[in-house]
Length: 360
Ligand code: FNR
Image (cartoon, rainbow, N blue to C red):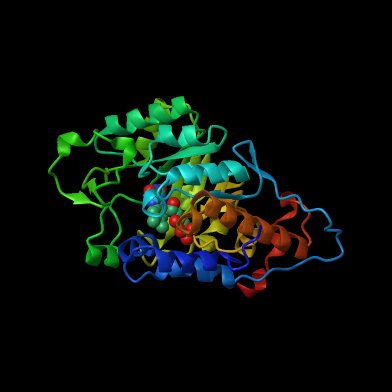
């Protein structure tokens, strides 16, 4: 049965805003400083116009694609976001089940409120990657890598844009932190030696290592045979370095505008990165995807797949697993329609000819 009140992703955003506590809503919504980059992530898609082709028999549209050789139902996956239990009591278990049901890729966050073991058990056939931060205490990073490898997670997504957490004003005003009944389950007990130390977001502060550099990418490669994907690249220079360091993928991302304010919208940096990489590794992107048209534009500009952050959380806040499924279904339907209306019968036919560059 189709819910006629939830027509587009913005409807879920509105619902989440009405139903979550103010502090929780503020945390999910937050961008850094003036939120210029967060907002530009969305606006940048609206500046792009398409060049639709006609009379191409679009009676059948195949939305399937693949990431790292694995087939998924359409080129939209779920980006890693923290603390899903704040939005829905089952938290990441619901997210994992929804992405399994829709047959797409779910990147589980280090800062999940369910453990990597619980997530794997909830959706045993789901296709999953694990998002990793590097800790000062390298043993912590090493232990979690071993666990996800054994659990069948298929790639490590190393987030590189958080040497320090960005300044999110409302979180400071609200003194936001995880309520005591919720835990960063992946590290239960592991931070004990630091008990009593200052906390940020309910996690001991100063655990992330701001000295992280390319040599740590090599360290990670020495640790694990899993493919490594670098999340948080915004320039061709860093894309080139990533390829030179032998990683398997890049996620063009500015962390949803939560880190450096004043940086570019991700869709605006995608072309230079795709050009630099020249097909040597897969390029993905996230930030501001809210409609099927946005997905079409990102794929046309060379992304292999895009990922949604906040929209998945709005889906959770609405109806848990079912809500996340609805979000993905709406994006799928919109993407299929946009493909058809622009004359694309399959994902391989989506290319730069679809973009009106003269206007950009
Ligand atoms: C994030 N993001 C994020 N990224 C990451 O690598 N690890 C994490 O734990 C988190 N946590 C997180 C929490 C919340 C509330 C948000 C909104 C974002 C960033 C995320 O993966 C992604 O880059 C952005 O959310 C994409 O932008 P949209 O889709 O939210 O516009």
